Image (tube, rainbow, N blue to C red; front, side, top):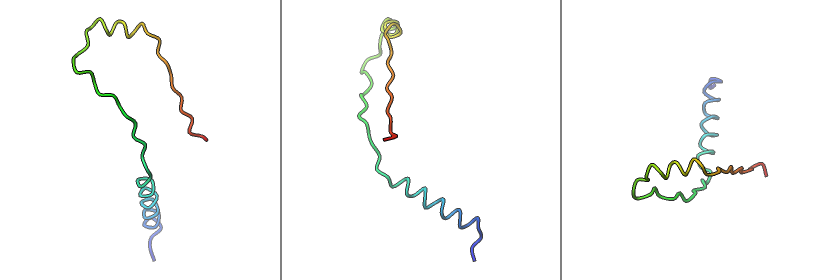
Length: 59
């Protein structure tokens, strides 16, 4: 007879394996700029309005 802890550990590992086997979405990420940006560009970035993206996965 297996100990309750051992049974729970086996179940936990099975659940973890199922999560790891799920497909993963890979988003294209733009590469970093080739040359460093000037300090003046950073000042202009701060003045721009920033947006927010909300992704609702609840279906």
